[in-house]
Image (cartoon, rainbow over all chains, first blue to last red; front, side, top):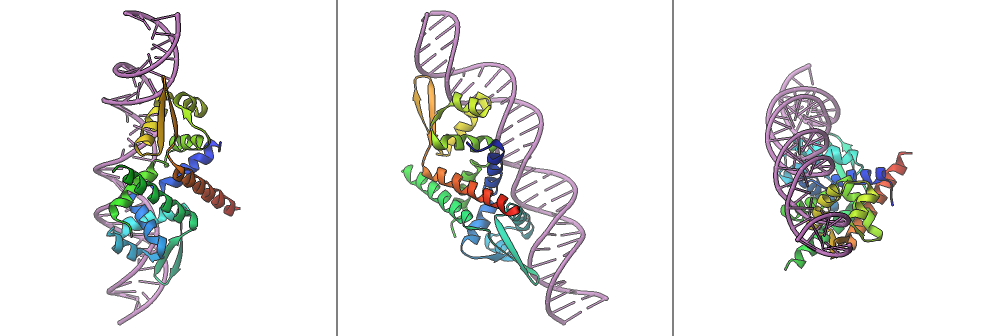
Length: 100
Length: 100
DNA sequence: TGAATATATGAACAATTATTCATATAATAA
DNA sequence: TTATTATATGAATAATTGTTCATATATTCA
């Protein structure tokens, strides 16, 4: 059994995925890195809201950034993120399937 | 790109993991099924709080139950849950390691 | 039937959080 | 330098949520 503190940190980590805007950003970054304005336009979420959420993603080590000129490019930090999203999607798709 | 609605459902799915009590319950059930009172005692969380959280876990298809007599046994619904917890733990342990 | 045990649940309060709005910072172009 | 563009951020409001307390339901035992 892992320590209570570590599991609380794990809960905090999963909070990152527990918001529609953030999970949409992460899924968008699964295939390709993108800059803030692209994310904002593709998801139809205000630039401010996107920046706020990207900050949380960055603080959680879930995305990394690269600044070139005025634009900041965001990408997934590592493959754990891809895998977690993948298995989450599989689970809910299966759960949906089993309802029929 | 997955649909906005599906990704919102995915966000809701991850909310399940985004609470210290729930993630501790899930980690506890990783190795062995347990009944409500065992969970309550092992985690030192009130029976009421545990039952409330177990209900959410059940509604999200994350655990399944079996009632025998007065006791209700809870277990993880499928291996996706184990895998998601596993990769989550790996991610935060690595992130910790990289700080040093 | 009545008492005891295991689990579930409704209501309410406290705490957390996502967005908007306004504005700040930084980089480029004119 | 001034204007423009890209991104970041502080404050405030609205909405969501986890726990506690009290109580309900269900099962077993005497």
